[in-house]
Image 1 (cartoon, rainbow, N blue to C red):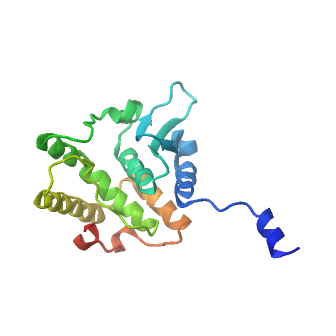
Image 2: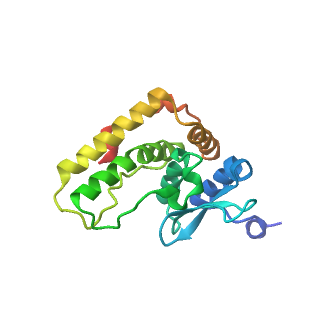
Image 3: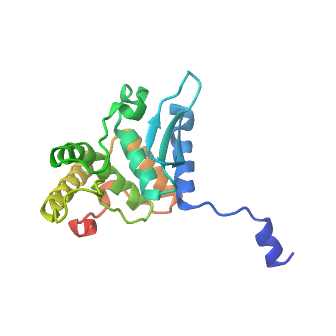
Length: 194
Protein backbone atom coordinates (compact mmCIF):
# COMPACT_ATOMS: atom_id res chain seq x y z
CA UNK A 1 0.00 0.00 0.00
CA UNK A 2 1.38 3.41 -0.96
CA UNK A 3 1.88 6.34 1.43
CA UNK A 4 -0.96 8.23 -0.23
CA UNK A 5 -3.37 5.33 0.37
CA UNK A 6 -2.24 4.99 4.00
CA UNK A 7 -2.79 8.71 4.57
CA UNK A 8 -6.26 8.48 3.06
CA UNK A 9 -7.15 5.58 5.35
CA UNK A 10 -5.80 7.06 8.60
CA UNK A 11 -8.25 9.07 10.70
CA UNK A 12 -7.88 12.86 10.53
CA UNK A 13 -5.86 14.42 13.34
CA UNK A 14 -7.84 16.16 16.03
CA UNK A 15 -7.23 19.83 16.60
CA UNK A 16 -5.78 20.90 19.94
CA UNK A 17 -9.15 22.14 21.17
CA UNK A 18 -10.82 18.86 20.21
CA UNK A 19 -8.17 17.11 22.26
CA UNK A 20 -9.06 19.34 25.23
CA UNK A 21 -12.73 18.36 24.81
CA UNK A 22 -11.75 14.69 24.80
CA UNK A 23 -9.60 15.10 27.92
CA UNK A 24 -12.46 16.85 29.70
CA UNK A 25 -14.88 14.08 28.72
CA UNK A 26 -12.52 11.38 29.97
CA UNK A 27 -12.04 13.23 33.27
CA UNK A 28 -15.60 14.31 34.02
CA UNK A 29 -18.05 12.84 31.51
CA UNK A 30 -18.97 9.76 33.54
CA UNK A 31 -18.27 10.98 37.05
CA UNK A 32 -19.94 14.41 36.82
CA UNK A 33 -22.09 14.04 33.66
CA UNK A 34 -20.51 17.14 32.15
CA UNK A 35 -19.13 17.76 28.68
CA UNK A 36 -17.19 20.60 27.09
CA UNK A 37 -18.48 21.87 23.75
CA UNK A 38 -17.29 24.55 21.35
CA UNK A 39 -19.10 26.50 18.66
CA UNK A 40 -20.97 28.88 20.97
CA UNK A 41 -21.41 32.57 20.17
CA UNK A 42 -20.69 33.26 23.85
CA UNK A 43 -19.41 31.04 26.67
CA UNK A 44 -22.14 29.52 28.83
CA UNK A 45 -22.56 26.79 31.42
CA UNK A 46 -25.90 25.04 31.09
CA UNK A 47 -26.87 22.58 33.83
CA UNK A 48 -28.70 19.44 32.77
CA UNK A 49 -32.43 19.89 32.15
CA UNK A 50 -33.23 16.60 33.88
CA UNK A 51 -31.46 13.83 35.73
CA UNK A 52 -29.43 11.65 33.41
CA UNK A 53 -28.77 14.47 30.92
CA UNK A 54 -25.35 16.07 30.55
CA UNK A 55 -24.43 19.45 31.93
CA UNK A 56 -22.79 21.37 29.07
CA UNK A 57 -19.91 23.80 29.35
CA UNK A 58 -19.93 25.85 26.14
CA UNK A 59 -16.89 27.77 25.00
CA UNK A 60 -16.66 30.42 22.32
CA UNK A 61 -16.34 29.27 18.70
CA UNK A 62 -13.32 26.97 18.48
CA UNK A 63 -11.05 29.12 20.61
CA UNK A 64 -8.52 27.12 22.57
CA UNK A 65 -8.14 29.77 25.28
CA UNK A 66 -11.92 30.01 25.72
CA UNK A 67 -12.14 26.25 26.29
CA UNK A 68 -9.43 26.34 28.98
CA UNK A 69 -10.92 29.45 30.57
CA UNK A 70 -14.41 27.98 30.84
CA UNK A 71 -13.00 24.79 32.34
CA UNK A 72 -11.17 26.94 34.91
CA UNK A 73 -14.49 28.54 35.95
CA UNK A 74 -16.09 25.09 36.14
CA UNK A 75 -13.24 23.76 38.29
CA UNK A 76 -13.82 26.55 40.81
CA UNK A 77 -17.63 26.35 40.91
CA UNK A 78 -18.99 24.35 43.81
CA UNK A 79 -21.85 21.85 43.58
CA UNK A 80 -24.59 24.47 44.16
CA UNK A 81 -23.17 26.83 41.53
CA UNK A 82 -22.96 23.94 39.05
CA UNK A 83 -26.74 23.60 39.30
CA UNK A 84 -27.23 27.19 38.05
CA UNK A 85 -27.02 28.58 34.53
CA UNK A 86 -23.62 30.20 34.09
CA UNK A 87 -22.88 29.21 37.72
CA UNK A 88 -25.21 32.02 38.85
CA UNK A 89 -22.62 34.68 37.98
CA UNK A 90 -23.57 38.12 36.77
CA UNK A 91 -22.02 39.32 33.56
CA UNK A 92 -21.81 42.89 32.29
CA UNK A 93 -21.04 43.07 28.57
CA UNK A 94 -18.13 44.86 26.93
CA UNK A 95 -18.03 48.57 27.69
CA UNK A 96 -18.15 48.16 31.48
CA UNK A 97 -17.70 51.12 33.80
CA UNK A 98 -14.48 51.23 35.85
CA UNK A 99 -16.38 49.94 38.92
CA UNK A 100 -17.92 47.08 36.93
CA UNK A 101 -14.50 46.25 35.49
CA UNK A 102 -12.93 46.06 38.97
CA UNK A 103 -15.73 43.72 40.13
CA UNK A 104 -15.22 41.58 37.02
CA UNK A 105 -11.48 41.32 37.73
CA UNK A 106 -12.05 40.24 41.33
CA UNK A 107 -14.10 37.31 40.01
CA UNK A 108 -11.68 36.61 37.14
CA UNK A 109 -8.39 36.51 39.02
CA UNK A 110 -8.60 32.88 40.14
CA UNK A 111 -9.99 31.38 36.91
CA UNK A 112 -7.33 33.15 34.88
CA UNK A 113 -4.67 31.79 37.21
CA UNK A 114 -6.00 28.25 36.66
CA UNK A 115 -6.17 28.86 32.92
CA UNK A 116 -2.47 29.75 33.03
CA UNK A 117 -1.72 26.35 34.61
CA UNK A 118 -3.83 24.60 31.96
CA UNK A 119 -2.10 26.54 29.17
CA UNK A 120 1.28 25.37 30.41
CA UNK A 121 0.02 21.77 30.54
CA UNK A 122 -0.90 22.12 26.85
CA UNK A 123 2.37 23.89 25.95
CA UNK A 124 0.40 26.96 24.89
CA UNK A 125 0.98 30.61 25.68
CA UNK A 126 -1.40 32.12 28.24
CA UNK A 127 -2.83 35.55 27.48
CA UNK A 128 -4.31 37.69 30.23
CA UNK A 129 -7.85 38.79 29.36
CA UNK A 130 -9.35 42.06 30.54
CA UNK A 131 -12.48 41.19 28.53
CA UNK A 132 -13.45 44.83 28.08
CA UNK A 133 -12.40 45.92 24.61
CA UNK A 134 -14.41 49.14 24.81
CA UNK A 135 -12.86 50.06 28.16
CA UNK A 136 -10.89 53.19 28.87
CA UNK A 137 -7.84 53.56 26.63
CA UNK A 138 -4.36 54.02 28.04
CA UNK A 139 -5.20 52.02 31.16
CA UNK A 140 -1.75 50.39 31.36
CA UNK A 141 -1.28 50.92 35.13
CA UNK A 142 -4.61 49.19 35.78
CA UNK A 143 -3.80 46.31 33.42
CA UNK A 144 -0.50 45.73 35.17
CA UNK A 145 -2.33 45.73 38.52
CA UNK A 146 -4.65 42.98 37.27
CA UNK A 147 -1.64 41.09 35.89
CA UNK A 148 0.04 41.27 39.32
CA UNK A 149 -3.15 39.95 40.94
CA UNK A 150 -3.33 36.99 38.56
CA UNK A 151 0.39 36.31 39.05
CA UNK A 152 -0.02 36.40 42.85
CA UNK A 153 -2.95 33.98 42.55
CA UNK A 154 -0.86 31.59 40.42
CA UNK A 155 1.88 31.56 43.05
CA UNK A 156 -0.68 31.01 45.83
CA UNK A 157 -2.21 28.06 43.93
CA UNK A 158 1.26 26.69 43.34
CA UNK A 159 2.00 26.78 47.08
CA UNK A 160 -1.40 25.48 48.24
CA UNK A 161 -2.01 23.04 45.39
CA UNK A 162 -4.66 23.05 42.71
CA UNK A 163 -8.28 22.27 43.62
CA UNK A 164 -9.12 18.58 43.06
CA UNK A 165 -10.93 18.88 39.71
CA UNK A 166 -8.35 21.36 38.40
CA UNK A 167 -5.51 19.05 39.47
CA UNK A 168 -7.12 16.06 37.73
CA UNK A 169 -7.66 18.08 34.54
CA UNK A 170 -4.13 19.50 34.65
CA UNK A 171 -2.58 16.03 34.96
CA UNK A 172 -4.78 14.67 32.15
CA UNK A 173 -3.75 17.58 29.90
CA UNK A 174 -0.09 16.89 30.69
CA UNK A 175 -0.56 13.27 29.58
CA UNK A 176 -2.44 14.27 26.42
CA UNK A 177 0.03 16.98 25.37
CA UNK A 178 3.12 15.10 26.61
CA UNK A 179 4.18 17.78 29.07
CA UNK A 180 4.74 15.79 32.27
CA UNK A 181 5.35 18.27 35.05
CA UNK A 182 4.22 18.77 38.62
CA UNK A 183 2.34 22.08 39.10
CA UNK A 184 4.77 22.96 41.90
CA UNK A 185 7.70 22.75 39.46
CA UNK A 186 6.27 25.11 36.84
CA UNK A 187 7.94 28.45 36.24
CA UNK A 188 5.71 31.54 36.03
CA UNK A 189 6.94 35.07 35.35
CA UNK A 190 5.27 38.46 35.06
CA UNK A 191 6.99 38.86 31.68
CA UNK A 192 4.77 36.08 30.30
CA UNK A 193 1.76 38.34 30.82
CA UNK A 194 3.04 41.10 28.52
